[in-house]
Length: 332
View 1 (cartoon, rainbow, N blue to C red):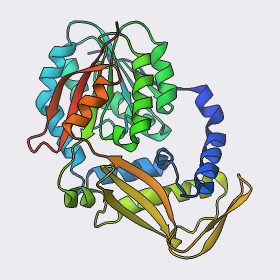
View 2: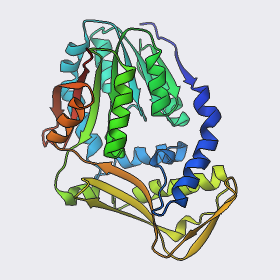
View 3: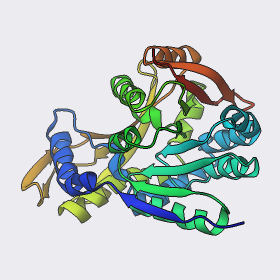
């Protein structure tokens, strides 16, 4: 079988503004009364490697559940998409471990599609494309290095083939309800009637199990969150001493979210050269680094229907810890 070329493209608008946007977002977050840093900035090469380790942790059930779902339902999904050629677009592709289940199956069924993984991490996209070149025969693929919203603009100017968007993992969970709504509106506007998205949701469950998934015994999740500080030091000339911050994560039952923080162990000041500003931290003051919102079925139905989508099917693992929900775009 002939091997198709696989390449990487870069969103120039995104890259020209990225360093300044990083600095602006850090200044805004650390100047807020309740300090925060955007979790998307965790994902440089180091952060992406740490997240791969997290996915293999015994406490982190999410990846195993989703792999189970995709293995079990790949034939059903192939039948949904088989009738027309389509563009398969993945937002937040990561290492593609789960996606390759679908890619290999779709190719074995001779489905006519092109694959475009989109990720903020250049190293993640490069590694994925190298892996696909070596291990997936006959795949027409082109990676794009950018963040979601630039990726959505890219979707809107693609050709007029049917689009199937993969938003796997629990990426939607990193957005608060307002952000999720805004994201889905933009996604809806980038797609056409009867396009599809397959979107992953971590289901609300026993709180102790949720907390364990974000507090592993090896402290890899802690190091993952501290990568925000390392990136600020490396790229913005920050003077953070990561050892002076402690990782803390817990479940907020009212918001239905795991919330993660870096807690200052002492009173301290940190200067960031690119921003030309010093930031004060009280002892035990928190920087919010990440939220992971959990959903029940009613939440998922409301989220789909209020933003222009129709749920075609919810696919579950055997324990119903996780769902991949297949939505169809509805436009009049």
